[in-house]
Image (cartoon, rainbow, N blue to C red):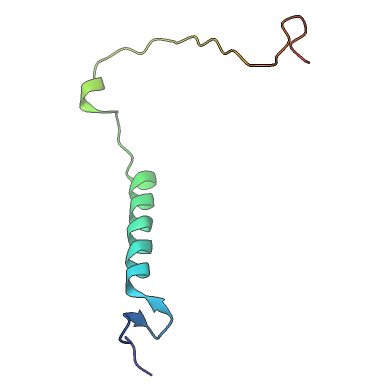
Length: 68
């Protein structure tokens, strides 16, 4: 049995490109969760955060009785 066939599949089942894509995805996930950035972007250093209030309008919500 050939390890790599003429279509680039290992043992005739899995493509080398699929393995490479899965490896890249795993490395990105690993990098996000195990090496997170300590701060935001460089432009946000030293900026104080302020609370934000948001009003939301929902179509079909009754003004008299919001539970309906």
